[in-house]
Image (cartoon, rainbow, N blue to C red):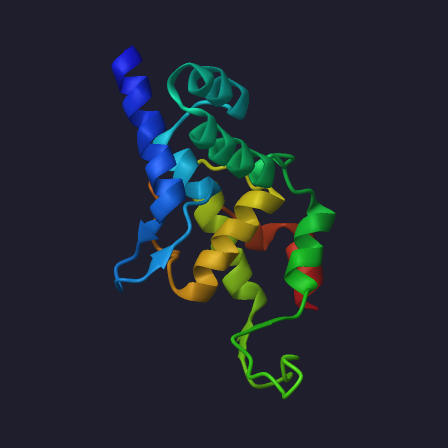
Length: 168
């Protein structure tokens, strides 16, 4: 058991260092969603075990990851409404000052955001701002397969009254 814990910790550290290779050959950073797919430990449990098996620098790297993802408060309806109503344009061209030029990039539609939320909830991952942002970053770079849901339960975000409100 102790050896498996150490192997899991070393795997997490390695993924934090080198990232995840996507199907297109590009590398993206290891994120909270990856962590939740490979470990069921809370951050407190992870740190307790890590302090016994990792060196100082590995522990520092792990603490930074935890600090960046510690927000595990579930999103409320008003948070979801704000996400759905927020204008998101990605990969826009930049002007000479480095400021994105509106209308030159890819617009992320509310339906895309709902697919991201369905991916999270459908994979038994808590829908928090940290998990949403990680999945959204994956969507932008093409590293999120929104069809990849690991169980059959239907998520009905579209039937939420706040979603209907946002579509008006």
